[in-house]
Amino acid sequence: MAMEKNQDSKVIMGRYKLGRLLGRGTFAKVYKAHNISTGEVVAIKVFDKEAVRRSGTVDQVRREVDVMRRLHHPNVVRLHEVMATRSRIYFVMEYASGGELFARLAESTRFPEPVARRYFQQLITAVEFCHSRGVYHRDLKPENLLLDAHGNLKVSDFGLSALADGASRHRGDALLHTTCGTPAYVAPEVILKRGYDGAKADIWSCGVILFVLLAGRLPFHDTNLVLLYKRIARSDYQCPAWFSIDARKLLARLLDPNPNTRITITKLMARTWFQKDSCPLSDKPLDTSETVTASSPTINVRPSSMNAFDIISRSSVLDLAKMFDAEHKTSEARFSSKETTTVIVSKLGKIAEAGRFSFKLNKEKGRVELEGSQDGRKRALALEAEIFEVAPSVHVVEMRKTGGDSLEFQDFYKQELKPSLGDIVWAWQGGDSPPPTLTTAVPRSNTNS
Image 1 (cartoon, rainbow, N blue to C red):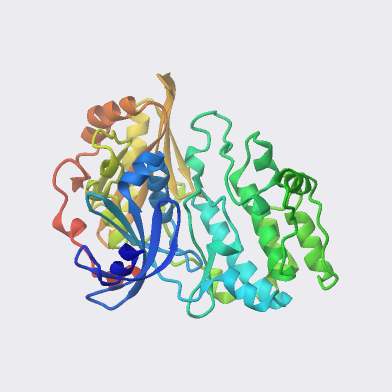
Image 2: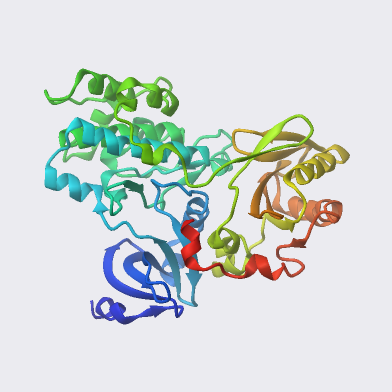
């Protein structure tokens, strides 16, 4: 306790002064803080590096960073930057001054249907955005939904989240297999431990949240965990008398115990009940899309600009893997280029044609995908490339291995990829020193633009 009291006067990295403790987890504590230079209020999540190592949750911390740096949306708590010392890791995040939605709900007992719908609209808009970025939250509940100063919802705590590109890595079935989440909000298929679709599991949790917002209580509750799970598996719940007919019908589709027939987000967002009194705040994410052409197809390049954290987090200087493991071997390659996106995409296509790769423009994800035609030590080598605009005349290309063996990726990078791209590359990250403009920190106030 004495240490926590002393945190009030502690300055982190000469930039942030810690304030009061906001909350704590198993291996981390969250403090309110402010930027000494700008006065901006933030939340800082502090990890004890040794405790993380001992607990075997290093990959979880890395994944949380990887997840949060993908998510720039008005209804998702934003990660501004990551800092580290010899013993601590600091996540500097957006501060949601309105506190937990759960606390607001406790004060009101339950919300009127229009109020519950407004929060639900913002929740679904955020979750849909997360899924479009290949992120499944897996622990959605009112305690992980925060409110800003204007009462707008912010999804937080991605510590148990999963990435779509890692779902099939171990079993090859494109499903998730880790049983996690809060029991009363967990989908039936998660409990059965047979593998589950992360998007469908999140939709179930959203259904439970909607019920809680409208009723002020859980749809499934029992002090005996086995009996609780049986109720969840049967979707055994009763709606209070004040629920509208449309709300009852929607809940029946959300809390469908069969994930194959459970309503999808697309169909949910098209329902009249959902669209009624829609809140305009969450209609669009903060980042925008740009369309470029390579031959005849088109590809969406996201985001159109990168903030300071986007740039720095992709630098080897802030590679979390190296914070824990000096011998970590990367399966990624990044370079900067002054060429247009059209030229970059075209060049990647020519590399695929000259080699053993198929070439595909994934319009939905806004990425270039290359897949090998020959199996290696661990199936065929597969890559994806994402292009980011740093400035009007500068792009950063991030390439990552999505299938195959890491050593084969490194050989391909050294022997084929790097030599073939030499004429359009301005600088390689991790090789030649990048231009100063790419690593110079941008003032913190710009990261919210």
